[in-house]
Image (cartoon, rainbow, N blue to C red; front, side, top):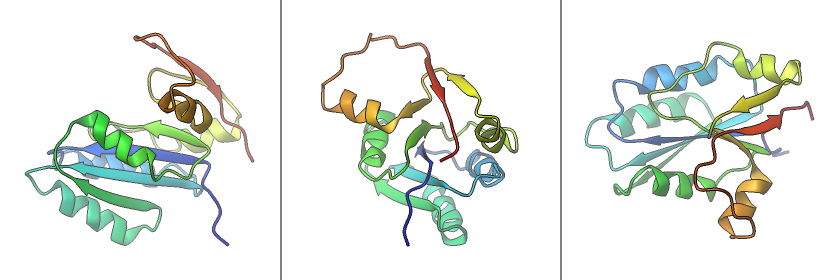
Length: 148
């Protein structure tokens, strides 16, 4: 049975070979099994794509997409076409989370206040379809992760 993950983490990748190991490794140490990671190589000229494929070969939760360089926004847009999670998080390729951050937040049913990072899938779909107009400079979004 193929169940949807709770969280989809989207990571645009551009010439990030020096940071990818830290970024992807931190996600594997979150203590959350119902998560997917979508890596979008955005025309990197270093060995970022090879690193992405190496991690995907080791972990079925990781997907890799490759596209010509078009910028972070176009990489995120491509990934949004493939997400399956109830929640969506954007992580830059030079970002990392402390071990267990996602498991702790979910277990405690914490209300997260994450600036420009985590969105409900339904909200993103509404924004993309132009059903909702948000201020140009959205600073923060309140959300609560709960166990399903």
